[in-house]
Length: 363
Image (cartoon, rainbow, N blue to C red; front, side, top):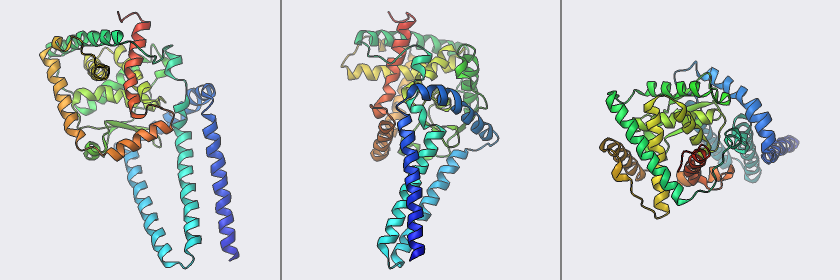
């Protein structure tokens, strides 16, 4: 009996400690300037570089293996707990201890997540570094951007056709994105990307049901990309995931960083990939505003073919996606300070419009 009381007391003291640490990390999130200076621009680059240095030595996704192992461990603990609960006579005490251990494990997972990457959700980031913010924009500015994108897509596609450029292999696409970051750092040193760790997801077969195109593993520092997507989508998606590796946690902010990298790159394939992605979001925003300006008819047949192919691919996938998983991810984003949840992806349009206005590129 005394041993049981001692175990309960020890478990509670551990729980209280993890609660205090978790609460402290939560409070730190209210000081974005401190996070930007000491974590995102100080501690985190060292953490991420070290993780990628280790990941780079492996030819498989350590993060995906970690998730699989974690799932097996959780399943095993559930089975062991259920069997023990059934066999024990003191079910209330066993259940209470199980609840304490569960809460303690969740909080430790949260602490590790925040220290390894999660604090970046509270950083200032791109808005300070590029002196621009995703401010509201007018429908006229949105229409103007749409027209500009059409011209640029037509130009890039015609250039690719002239060069007889075929879709690149997955490994080459990753190299294109990595090289683009190397070039961009010359202008923006804070985008320096060393020890690249971009890998194809081991869960690509599950992607149609989960609904991801790529993801970042904060516990291993790896960027994973879904390899069965239309290849023209992959260069920009890869740049997006690399932005997460560099500490840009906000989805729209990571997309903006990827856009900057594509814009500064001299690789037409990457540039075209970014234009395609942004144009799709622009058309979506126009639809939501019930605005249908002239323009789509100006798209070249080759660009239309790419857009139709991507549209049909995504439409086919939408029937397989789990609404529960989608809602869970939406909740995850909102819990980390993104009030729009999944809709925050659309903010890339606001980032680019304000960026182009600052440069005088939108008429």
